[in-house]
Image: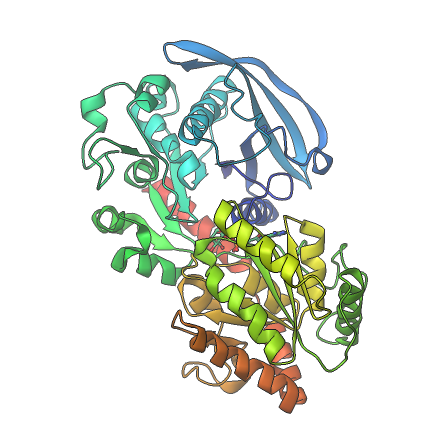
Length: 492
Ligand SMILES: Nc1ncnc2c1ncn2[C@@H]1O[C@H](COP(=O)(O)OP(=O)(O)O[C@H]2O[C@H](CO)[C@@H](O)[C@H](O)[C@H]2O)[C@@H](O)[C@H]1O
């Protein structure tokens, strides 16, 4: 089988969050299973060029029709830790991908509409004929639309599309100019409720909706979130569309790449360890404390948060977790970055306020290397999300023997099983703490139980750590599920 992934991120060369991890991890797993995989990405000026090997020009002057004229692109090619990636580099005054950022520009929908079109043009012109094109999130929602309405007639008539939604919040809302620019034109045809028209704004196009309507299969990244998306308001207005297309919609739990996220081989942590050698985890805790100037106190638990500081992640609870951990005699480390000004200012304020506190460190920004040391050094990790399609940090935490304390939503519910209350798992298979409400006391009660166990019953806590480490959240299972899906849509 031959798969082309089209995405806006691929770790570690382009990573804003979990999407990058998934594109890389899934591609690697598929290749291990003998599938040919290529990845098409934008060539951002700010991506990590040090993570690409052998970057060279693969296609010169690719002509991409745009607004009745054309934009010429060079396509570069290189290996990102063994994965073959193509980077699209348009030459135009718009400087689509030379803005010093991945997202957050006013014309994001145009930037990624162009990327979607250029990716298909590249596939067409280079005579690539993948069995499956796998697209991700709103940025590539237009790919199946362009494929079935246009490129099918130019020779891409045998390709099937799998569309994975990692976050319903961002859907790519745009105007009619997207149709004129991409050459889809026919305004009245696309502004139909059963095509791209936004479900609530009749004058807007919704790119994610296009992805859902036109793909052969659509999935989100955990079974529970697939259920939430259909039956709650978490799909941000796309619930009815999912209902109409429910025969081709499902949830596939993400995995984590155990070459990257594995305390036995992790190249970013000073002491490797496994469940048989947990003493070295304590040494990493020591190293983390030294690096972040935290006090050394054997008895104190170290609690962490790693993630985007965004409304989705339950920032009010993250903030509360810091002070509650300190109040309960623990230490806290936060690694996060905020794109929203208000949240950014808030956490900078907290950082300055807590600067002298020897039990607490807030690191604001994106730091891949430090994140590995935190997973290895912390004793617990909090994930108090408002909603969470899958969540990778709790799965990485489990692998590193860091007990997750999570809110029971989305993929968190599929992966973390409360030590005290989970009725469906025997005691020896439980792996963390779960709370459900969004108020402070819900979080406090879960943190209380975790910290209480740490202080009062250290051996029991150790047992819980080991139980978590035995869970296999690698790409093994999701890899075979995706292969099954590809096979299904290929022969349908
Ligand atoms: N400041 C920082 N510095 C260094 N590393 C950082 C960091 N902030 C986050 N990370 C890393 O980025 C990844 C984030 O994973 P999440 O599951 O939280 O994804 P996110 O919410 O971005 O994406 C969406 O997509 C993913 C993938 O499908 C879903 O799991 C998730 O629920 C959905 O919201 C982890 O590898 C984490 O270590």
